[in-house]
Amino acid sequence: MRVLFQGAFYFYKQIISLLPASAIHFLPLADKNSSSQRKHWHNWQTRLPPSWVHLLPILMWLIVGISLRLVNLTAKPPWTDEFATLVFSLGNTFLSVPLDQAITPDILLQPLQPNPAASIGDVIHNLATQDSHPPLYFVLAYLWMKLFPSDGGLVSLFGARSLPAIFGAASIPCVYVLSRVAFRSSLVGHLTAAMMAVSPYGVFLAQEARHYTLAVLWVIGSLTCLVIATRHIQNRTPLPIWVALLWIGINALGIATHYFFTLTLCTEVVVLIFLAWLQLQTSSKFSLLFSPLWQRIYAVAIGTCVAGLIWIPTLLENENRGALTEWIRGSRVGLDWFSPIFQALGTLIAMISLLPVESSQALVVIPSGLVMLTFFIWAVPILLRGIKIQLQHPENRIMIQVLAGVVISAIALFFIFTYFLSIDLTRGARYNFVYFPAIVVLLGASLAVCWHPPQEWMETEPGKNGITSIGKWGINGKKAVILIWLMGFFSAVTVICNLGYQKYYRPDLFVQLIQQTSPTPVLIATTHKTYVHTGEMMGVAREIKLANSLQNPLFLLAHQDRDPNASTIALENTLKKLPRPFDLWLVNFHAPIAETVKTCVMSNTQSLPTVDGYEYELYHCQ
Image 1 (tube, rainbow, N blue to C red):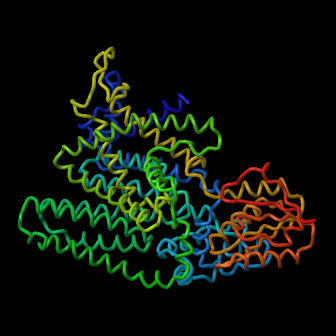
Image 2 (tube, one colour; image 1 turned 90 degrees about the vertical axis):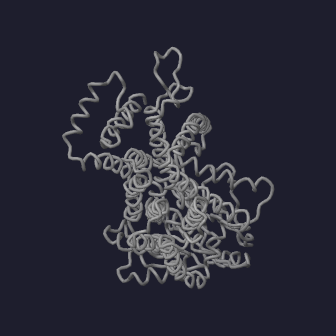
Image 3 (cartoon, rainbow, N blue to C red; image 1 turned 180 degrees about the vertical axis):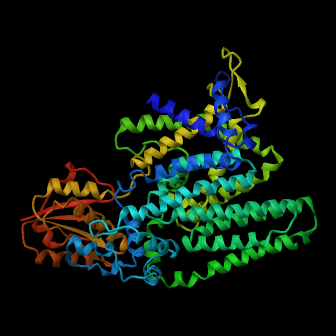
């Protein structure tokens, strides 16, 4: 482990030594006892063309980022939301799966088979009538997955997940551009890109076959336009027409990717109102708000509204949107009122650091929790002081305020939806993509100060021969940055190994349990309301197909709308038709037990392990 830390430390230091000359004078590249090493790297750097000096560090971070996002890409089984992506991106539909009757795994998995006859029009139509998301990402996935051969007759999981992984890696150079434009510093840009490359939250989003990494790219693009507009508001110069048109286009694409992108737009509106207020503080002329600059900003707002309004009819016509979002709705009692606060805080923390605190073993959870707690007790004061120093810089103050305004406004919106509209957005960590890039840029800006802190920030510890350090723990600026980056790196590895941001469903473990417990044919029955429940069973059927060990397993999707007894009747009728003996697994079955089930012997499942996403009861029917 020591060798690994030393190797990562040295690797990071050499990459940072490739920073462009415009940033080098802000920071010492080596310790006092490493002048020969510094000279070697400096000579190599001077032999490179200027453009390469800028591009090499970005390329390094891109390689690190894409590697982390592609490692173990198919090791974790897909879950219900990913099955929705796979089915709809193929132009297929869940409606082809029969309900209220026993079906084989092949019939249940039929929507996952590539359909050569399906078109982009089918993708858009199925989404509009059966799902609650806009179609842009699904159309791109439809085109992308055609490049990959099927896997055992089913769509390629690697093909489906590699697209968001690539989009996630693309956010690394894009966030470099955002931070470079905001702070006019290549150092801030490179440190931001470095943290984006290893962010555990970024890796989590990139390893799921969903549209969030594409949405992150649009958030980065929209924030870049906001930063450019802020500069023009500062200088009181008109916003270039091409920037206004680009801004509208990015916003339109963002809404066409995920409707929650509108939350990012709301935060930008809040920031622009703040900037208008600041401008009025310096000038009492209210007419400034009608200058050509603000007129173009208003035009951007109008264009964006038009781009968003075209999706309203699609949303209103979709009858499934209420049922599909039911999981984030509900009432609270007692301590449940505090859950959203801790959920939001946990997501913020996991954007930087996430060790295996979700493990089932206390010997892993306790040390991991202590390390994370110690890390944040040490790191948070350093990062906050870095932001404070940036606020003292006239050129950077407004950008810190803009980005912080985006983050604070987004979190406030989440709590408004949660506490006032009873829509708990904090339950879905992935929804925080709306402000994730702003967090990373603020982190990069703080680390840039940490890398080369001002003299008054440094402390000289007794007995250290005058060596300066940050804080009380004897860690200097460069080592502090590297330590924070390494924490991000090992946190990303935690996510890759499914020890952090663990999958909600573990059908692989459930199938192993069935194999070990049921020597006879099995019927796996669940209650069904939406395609979410179909996806739960698809995960099990897919694992059975991959394992190819169960004999003639059957599935029952017992549909119910408002009357739970409908599922009970479907189960009753199905059981009467099946030859015995067989084992009945009731999985996530939320309905009264059928009379026929009572003729079977209920197994004592208390001695059996629990499986994430699958609550079960086992009956032996002889």
